[in-house]
Image 1: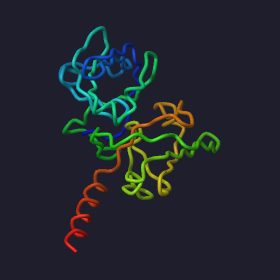
Image 2: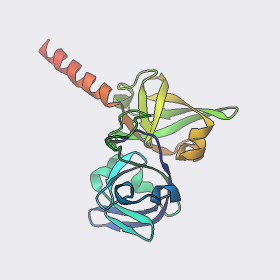
Image 3: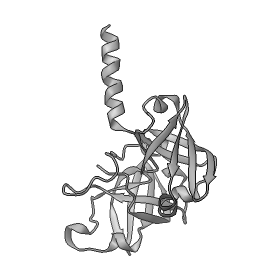
Length: 206
């Protein structure tokens, strides 16, 4: 489980195609390498990369290695990563941690695209085009994770939604460098999924 509060930007240092997917090596920012004992990243830990939960399979030279299978690659933008790219990183939420964003599972629902970028001084209003099935799970003032970033939905249309981005979010996440047409990982609020499932059952029962 994650919160959608990005800990730092990592840098992709290696990408290797494997028989069943992709191996990605990422150099995390220095603050994420600090600490000791259980606070330090360990083999087997869960880390959200652009909002996609992956397992640390190797730690070497202050870099973390991950493997992404075909299912993950088909539903996320991780297959488009290349050496030098920046990625949003968040380690899993500790039991005694503070939940400052919203409950993010790290299970990406699908890929959206940056549709419009409107600059309002230092702020940015950004629209994302998504499949209609995902837009139906969103409501104004509800939560959504875009590339793992916990954001508040401003407006929702049939196949797109908008968010308002403050300067801090733009400076510490990948959204500050996104351009129109760029693919982004979308995870809708888990509460919306449960409500949709329950309502579908009631409809089926008549």
